[in-house]
Image (cartoon, rainbow, N blue to C red; front, side, top):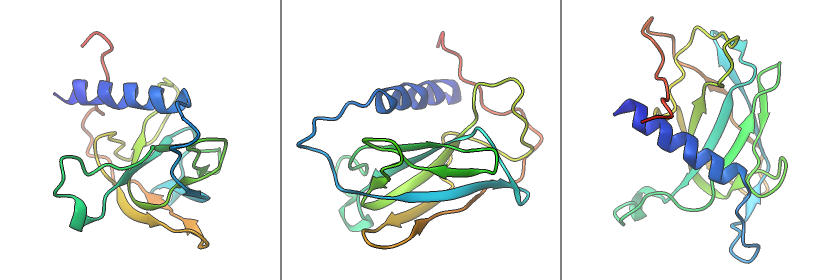
Length: 152
């Protein structure tokens, strides 16, 4: 089950990265930045994504997600800038689930848990405010990290 969830995440990210935007249906965005940390040390080359979601009062509908997902790649110092429709334009206004994805780089080293199906934070992106969200990854469990098998 975890492998198929990971595949869904990867496929979703590919759609978002491809930039499918109609122009007229774009949701308003605000600049979003932050830093990803593991044991208070920066994590480079991790993929951070913001999934817009409906407020809890509206979540009784069929889907709690609303709007286009924003994505950012962490730099060497762990900082990220979220892109939704263009480079570093920010995330859709409103509530978001924040998740982090391990890169497909065999040299990537991080002792903390990185699970693409685990929500690390729920935040609100607001217009006219500083939207800076630092993400402290949870400690590693010593178990193998979830892997995505493209054949499943």
